[in-house]
Amino acid sequence: MKTARKLSFIVLTSFYPEAQRAVLYADELAGGVDGRLLLLHANRISFFDPYIFTGESWRRQELADEPGIKAMLANMAAQLHTPATVELITDLLPTAAQALTRQHNPALFVVGRPADDAATPDQVSLMLLELLRAVQLPLLLVPQRTAAATPPRRVLIAADSEPFALPPAIEGVKQLLHQLAPHVTIVHVSGIEDDENCARARHAVELSGLTTDLPEVEPRGYQYARPADGILAAIDDMGADLVVLLTRQRSYLGELFHHSVTAEVLRRSPVPVLAVPAAEPPAAQRRQAHHAADNVLA
Image 1 (cartoon, rainbow, N blue to C red):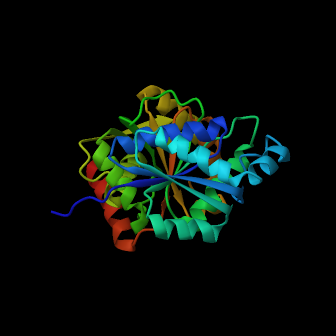
Image 2 (cartoon, one colour):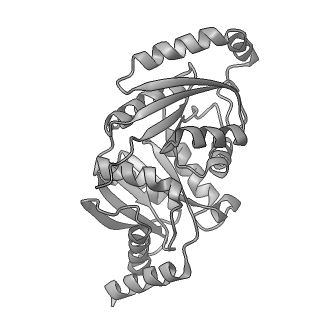
Image 3 (cartoon, rainbow, N blue to C red):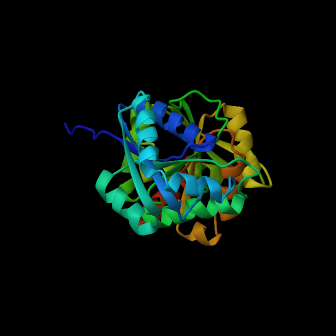
């Protein structure tokens, strides 16, 4: 029997509350699956600058004291429950993110969500989309005031009715869900009561392999004019402690399960949100998903 690899998570960190919360959450999550962490500090981050709301004086102070930063990060890592290493880079550019991915083979990137008055929804979404484009890996956005216990026990997967495929880089997320074995609800939001598309959403997720071998998976539909409102209502209704959002290449351009929905959920969700890149499926898989849903409704 093939032994599952030890999962690793890259956490973008600094000495500010949002990043600190992300580190603590990642520590609990990795601890639940016997994983490990890489605490990554970048002097300049092209995707998201954590010092944008604190002023350049803080940036200059930390740039002048890189050995001190590394020592403080090492002290932070030593206090975690999960084995953690520290890495400092000058610029987190797409090429640097790709190099880190090749070197460490992480299951996902973990990022702290800025405070509401520190960054607009568009800024947050742009940061996530840039990282998704660069590394094609899942990104976990952690609210500063995350109240849910970790590791997550109730997971909400928000899905539309269109089939999708998962790239090989998503194997880490599938393994994470398998090891956590949470209760999973596949949520479809529509402006009308729509059992057909709710069934299609469930079968699209199942055929992707994302929920294979999970013990508890159920579909649920929500009737809301605005999809983000439906997803947020589902979080509260289910007591979910993690939301999975599927992001397609075409959604980067604002289509289908579109950018504004993703941005609003990322901004408003009271629990961590895992953005998972998805691809267009082969034609055979698309037909299989539609046939499976048709059979259930027949």
